[in-house]
Length: 305
Image 1 (cartoon, rainbow, N blue to C red):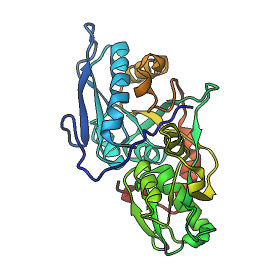
Image 2 (cartoon, one colour; image 1 turned 60 degrees about the horizontal axis):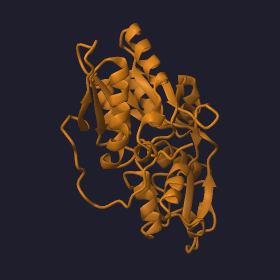
Image 3 (spheres, rainbow, N blue to C red; image 1 turned 90 degrees about the vertical axis):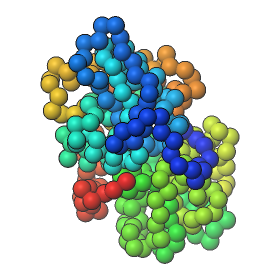
Image 4 (spheres, rainbow, N blue to C red; image 1 turned 45 degrees about the vertical axis):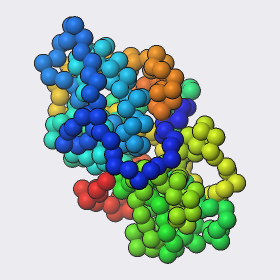
C-alpha cells in the first residue's frame, strides 16, 4: 500500500488557495476533451487530510485523467475542512467526493453520498489502515489511562483515525474524550505528529499512514514514541457519488473510476495517494464506523471540522 498522507513539517501559515470557491481550493487546472459530453463540469472533492499544496499535485492529474476518460471538464475542489466537503455535496456543489470513513457516514446521512470505490492494497482488495494513541517515550505516561487530564492532540473533529477511534479508545479506558483530556484539534495527521514530536502535547493520535509517510521521509524513529493503544484495521477512504444523479451518469462515473490506471501518474505525486489502484467498494464496508458512532452517542450533525 502506498502512503496516503504526504509528509511535511506543518508551519503556522495561512492556507494558500489556487482559485476560489465557497468550500476551499479549486484547482485552476480543468481537463476538457474535444468530445466533451457534459453540459456542466464534474466537481470532484477531496477531503483536506493534508495541506492543499501537498494534495493538489497528486489529485490534479488524477482528476484530469478522470475527465479525459469520462469526456467531461472536471474541477477539483479541496475544501478548507472535512465538514466543508460534506456541506458542498449536500448543497449540490460536488458530484464526486473522496471522504474519510467518518466523513462519509455523515455525507451518506445528510448529502445522499453513495460509496462506490476505494483504493486497493497489493492484493487488489480494499485497503485498510490503523489508528493509534501514542506518547513521547520520554514521558511518564505508561498506559492509556495515564492520559487523563493530559494535553491530547486530535486531528480533526470529523476524522476517523484522528478523532473517532481515539475517542472510542479513551472512553473504553474510562476517560471522557471531551472533558477527560485537554484536547486540541491540530488540523491534520501531520500536525498531530509534529505536536507529539515537538513535545507540545502529552498524548495524541497517530495513524499508520502518517507513520509510513514519516518513514519514507526519513524522519521516523519508533523509539521516540510509546504506543498506548492501536485499533483494528479500518477501511480507507471511500470515493462517493451524489445519490440524486441520474443512474446512467452514476454508472458512467463508476466505470471511469474503476478503469483509472493511476500508475500513469508521476511517481512523486502518486506517492501521496493510497495506491495505484481503485477498486469497487460498498456502503456496508463502513457499518463498523456507524456502530462506533452509536457507541459514542455522537450527533454527526454537530460535528464541525
